[in-house]
Length: 234
Image (cartoon, rainbow, N blue to C red; front, side):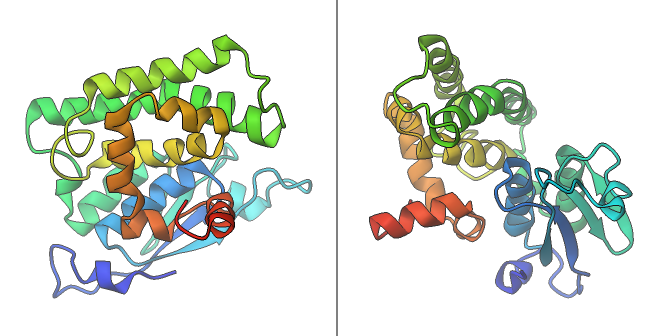
C-alpha cells in the first residue's frame, strides 16, 4: 500500500524517501494508529499482516523484530523499531511533518495528555470493555453499568479537554490520530454509538475525522462491512 499523493506533500519534495514497512494487522488499534501517522505524514509504506491471535503463534522472524510479541513493528531504510510512540515520533522526524504535534508548549502537553488517556484508559474501557464485550462476545444489552460508565467517563474527560474542531485546536495532531481508532471501534457497538451521542462535541469531531483520506484508507474490516450494509460510510 503506497500513498504517493500524500508522499508528494512531505516537507522536502525534492528528496525521494525509501518506503517503510509496517508489520501488524488491519484489525489492530495500534497498527491502525501507526498507519494513520504514516498516511498523514505522507511516508510511502506497505503493511505486512501479522496475526497475534493465530493458533500457530507468531513466527520466529516476527519475534526477532518485536521480542514481546505485540504489534506493530516497523522498518525503514534498514532501521527497525517497535512501540507505537517511537514509530510515530520517527515518522514525524523523517518526514518533516512536525505539525502533527501542536506548536505551543501547553497545546503539546495537552496532546500528549490525551494520547496517554487513550492508552491508559480509553483502550481498555472503550475497545475491550464495550466493543469486544458487546460485539465479539455477543453481550448486546448485557453490559453492566460499571462497564458502560468506565467508557462514558473517558468520553466525558475528552469532551472537557478538547479544542475545536479537532482535539487540540484547528488541525489534526497525534491526539486525534491516537483517539480515532478507538472511537471507530466504540461506534461499532450499539452501546458505544449511544454513548458517543451523549457528547455532541465529540460526535462533531468524528464527523471531521471520518472522511479524512487517512481514516478511509485504514478502516477496519468490520467498518468496511458495516458501511457496505448501510450503503455508505460507517
